[in-house]
Length: 428
Image (cartoon, rainbow, N blue to C red):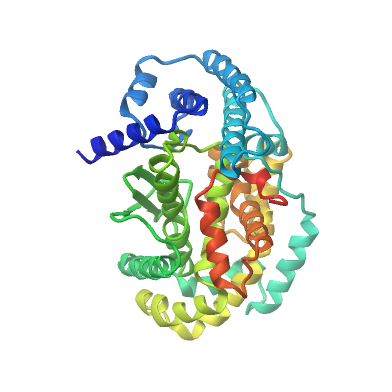
């Protein structure tokens, strides 16, 4: 009955707000669902009319048919461009649909075996290209870490040994995550008003290429899965609780459902195609949201008072641990370079794993898992670090600097609640 109420409410809003864009949006949603029949990873979330999904399943279209219809939709969108003086959010909506349908056509091309370089693919799918970094830059950071870590063996071995002191015991994992979720949620609710009834559940899973995943289910509810294949370090509690939950993916999807789908009747936001520009915003805000909710000193205090005790770890080591992690974070883009070289055929899977170990300080099992992720999601990797950097620059350009927390949250929430996409962050 709750679903029926949602459908009725959506129908009422759409009846009030009649526009050609609503018809185009419906065509877009149905094309996304149709492509999902060929690509199991493509439709990340859908909570629109169930008959549309059923239609996609029973009337399965070929990739060629999908591309032909997508091309026709592109032409219709060009003809429906809003005037320059239109409300900004209306113009953003048009840009959003245009970019999203363009990415859909690229995904169709990939599924028909058309080859793209790493940068061509990321630009076409995610509306952005990650910078290229000289491995010598990463090597300098690795050497700097070597001076900070005890022992005399390889830096990776010493880093693994150091970090092994900060693994969350299995029997304390759920309690630690619950403490982290509560901390992230309480901080988010101080600044962001969320609709009544929003909630998520957490499951612990295995045999995945990712460490955590938010499956948004509509009705302001999410299922968050945490992969326990590998040891989970104490920093991942807040990272995952914020990234997947508050103020990350869960809040992002909740606000889109509330502000775009229910309030405006913009049905295109009831579906989330993973391989699209929307993902850079989703991942970028989820990662930047960690810093918004927990500026470094606040985080350290919360780790010492709450997270380390929940995990049964000595909080006296928290400051040193996060100093080391800050250095390791400078190696983030090494993962992009590994993916770029792997996808471009410059490295094989073994070579990509070795690159991650050498320049990213991934343990061997973690490097192997990351290569599996690249096999499955390819250039998607840019959305985490480049996305975070682009979102940070945008928020700060609007006055959301670290010295003005209230403004930071305000601009951040506005971004979460809008159709703005990556190219709109640059000089936005």
